[in-house]
Length: 310
Image (cartoon, rainbow, N blue to C red; front, side, top):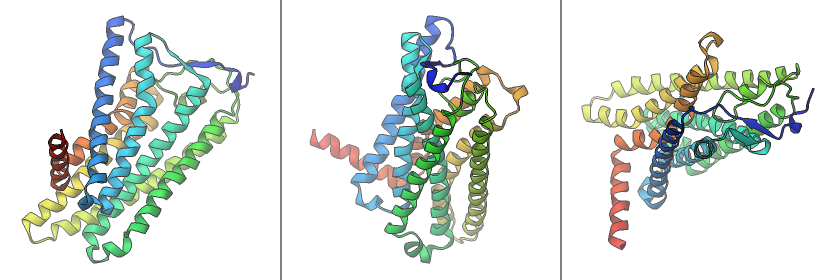
């Protein structure tokens, strides 16, 4: 029985066999990564530079953009590097860092999306109490709770996972280091402790999901009672992008982690993991900006200002 620390490196999921397909994989991931950097960078710059957007909704959106940048930067650059160099290796320390950062950004993103649903609920269902329930101090405390709480949660998962003895080799059936894949290499019953932590995390995630569903049921009931058709359109324009992001993130994440072993295969696991770990950070800026007139106007103003300075 070998301790996990005796493993010098791990082997990630083999990439397509031909060199042309490997380069295609590199170019595809590069395009997605650059789109995520550009989109989230523009959202961060726009919200930070326009004082009209210094409201709770855009404060949480700025935090989401920061999380998206970290989320996609955790897995994609290493995968592109492996494709370019035609290798599968990732160091032990690099794998531990990926596990920690992936668990952190994944749980933080879901927690923040839950917080944003509360923001939308208060804004539409209790508008007269909005400033009281979501003042600047409350928003900072909620964001800090998300960042600190998920940091400790990810640290606990990482420490527990890499304290397990591994004796089933060092090959992972994923293009990045993922906790369930590392647990498959364990030869100790101690892995049940980590499984227990995962179950606790799933239960907490389910409670967040129930909170989100209840919030949106109340939101849509309130919106449909608005007598003005224009008022309904404005409310839906604010809520639907957030709901679209939630659906994409939750459905792909649930399928990836709860699908039956009988329908599991390396190719399917790869596609699903890309859908919930790579695609959302790239498309979130597009989803939020297309239906948000305030954000589009502020972004146009920022771009015009940059060209005028030149």
